[in-house]
Length: 112
Length: 114
Image (tube, helix red, strand yellow):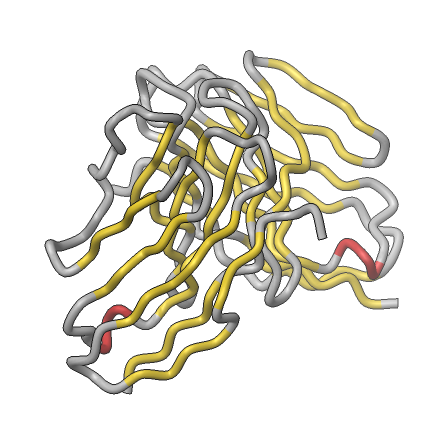
């Protein structure tokens, strides 16, 4: 079992839809979670990070962590064609923040 | 630009040849990372440099892979005797420090071994 699992998609939604992207993780010691967005042929860029259970909101994006079920989610409201990208969840290896374990990434396409 | 710069952007090499990939981190960033992204896979940690400390090489997949960082700035990732399974995007990243600092990625070097 991989330490971080993510459905690769692709996920195709119409503009304006609410998008839900999800990851599961296996190690209950993981505490710090990140979402990266990666456009085609570009490097990943940090979108959001969360440290504890609960929700964190930033504009149209909401990150949610459920430690009891080891489940993390990213919600995108009012999705736009410019949101079309691959979304990767990540968490640091236990014991330090210097190295990240990434999910495989979910490819999202938002069509007009 | 002010971002992480990587070269070459694309490299096609024959199996068995050595390749060198270069990374120029953001000025002032003391931490530098190399990751590998294979088709349909997430990023895989390779190596981490922090200041003058010994690098964390725990992610290097074999002894054919090595990396160095000269003068605390530019880094070179070397793959010797390349194999087809080495085909991937090699991403370099840097951060202002180690723990807790945002990591900024370059656009990657796309390596194809034929």
